[in-house]
Image 1 (cartoon, rainbow, N blue to C red):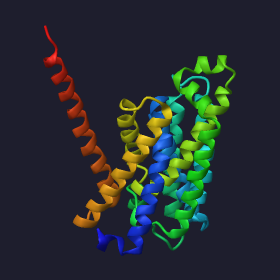
Image 2 (tube, helix red, strand yellow; image 1 turned 60 degrees about the vertical axis):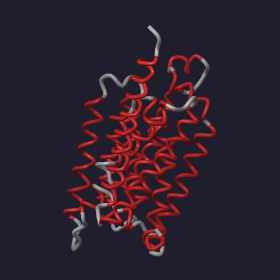
Image 3 (cartoon, rainbow, N blue to C red; image 1 turned 90 degrees about the vertical axis):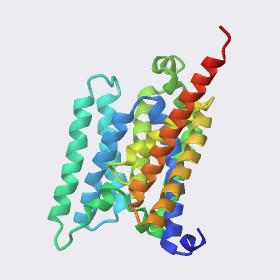
Length: 276
């Protein structure tokens, strides 16, 4: 561990993982309780279009990806603001269009052949210090928005009709939630890549939901779990020379399976312990 922390790139990777964990805890909880996993997946894959634009135009990747992904998320929010039932086709089209745009623009970038794998499966070990400060600002923005609209988000997550009846701006909150998802997704892509991002968003939040009594508590527990998975995956990647993004998701998946088996055994034990 001391040897690992002596390298600057590992220090940056740890900072990036912890900052991404905060975004995972906040957005993952909202995504899970509002049953928006497919929608979040569409936002994640559309983000690749922003990566392609950044390389084609020679712009910084993270700010460009945030801007493009926000635009794509607003289109998805518009398509799903009234009903999620018949909007999956539009989300799927935007999902595929963003990926295709990103790949084509990277192919057309003169004199530069970017490594697609670094964005598809993450490149946390190459996150620069400048992106760390951007992630700090994005995390701060997410925390401020959640604090300002926590009661409205809570009502929205519980029942949209109830939220409307108490005067909450349901449609505006839907747009805001998708915009926050877009920001979080771009942060997490640098950690585990856009293909694996949904796993890191949903696994900790799903585990936290079972053991939390409030949405705020769920966000805190989910953030802690996300941080643990990121650190454990980084340690595995460093020790065995593995791909960092895949190692993080592997750590999360193994913990999830052990947790599910533990819950099942606990329920069986309680069932056997009951008196006939």
